[in-house]
Image 1 (tube, rainbow, N blue to C red):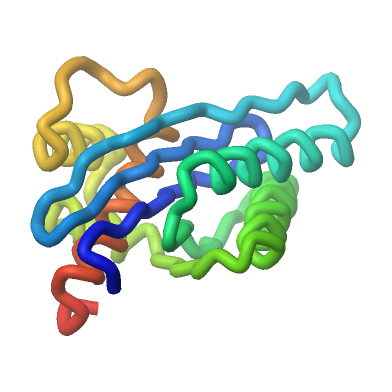
Image 2: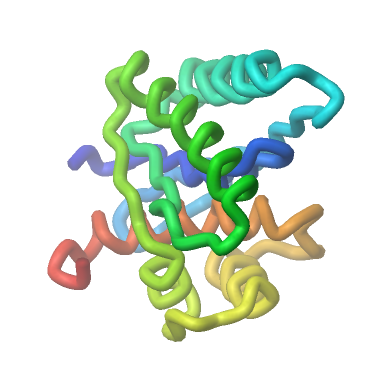
Length: 165
């Protein structure tokens, strides 16, 4: 691993995808970019997926991350939500493949455990700890940003202490 690693955390969804990009060097991690990628339900599905793919590829080209950290697929009782999440994840996986970017997937429980010490933490607890760990002020626009930064933090901790994973 290089001395400094750029980690792109992604909280994937079809309507709003959160992106959090960290620079990790040793024990220090610093936010270098956050973004929300929004798609409109009024657009046809192929156009929404294209926008998500192109936006993620654009960020990969701009920030040159070494690793993309993504929350692993989870069980959902709502089939429609699960399908749209799968489609969003699919274009993000394609962006990784097309850009030869290393992908690491973590369960929601692993991410919450890494950031809060509690695998069943609430979104509010995750957001609070992300702000605290990264010395950030103010509130996040949405939980999509704090969740993406949490995924990136989880990856950063794995790099710094591989025996924890």
